[in-house]
Length: 328
Image (cartoon, rainbow, N blue to C red):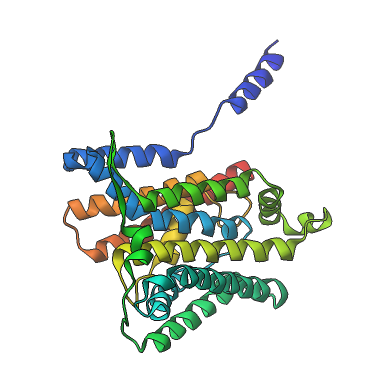
């Protein structure tokens, strides 16, 4: 009887829903922030927090596609910089240029992702090296394009997405447009990753590319699409950042590592095959909550970078140990 009961208990245990630890960490950090600053619990406080976190959350969700497929995309930070700098120059202070400038930026982002994917898939350059080279190239393009200093400014129509809040709403008082963009794009990226064949193929490639190829998965095509999704998410993040940060030649600096850290915090495996879009977004919110808490503690900017590095190392170490014990 015992031999029959134990397997039944194991099956019941496996059927219980498993909640990603990142949600508990995020909740604990929010409580700590509220204790230190009760104003954070007011609608204006947490809405502004979500507004600031939206660009990184979108970026992490897009980065997840590349990570799950077994690669990295280090070029997203430079894509953000190029979007902000290029948009300010192309718009030429003309409000009527907003939509074609945004369309141009998305076309450039798609091109960057396509080139990254082609280099990785057909030239067999490791994604770390290929996207690092693209990062350096795009930073150089942005520097030459701007002459090394911010030029022009972003019109109010362009900055609407990152800066504007819908006021006088019941209960929440304000609703940032950036949060609406996050919800729409986050749902789209979730659906694409977890409800379509593309998402299943991305997971299969990250888990075992050779087996996926033998099963008929178009490995190269899917990997190229993953890089394109990542670059397009960087364009969306750049538009939001330009909205509330303005024009700067280093606006995207460090965002590539923040996106990877957020995805890993959400449980993504750096060797590919495993990852969740909602958890990656929660990882981005967690990282922003940590930075907010450090600011309330009055700790300097270098401490923030140290903490981010330690978080990334710890999260990867835990993920590798889990992979060793579970075989996943």
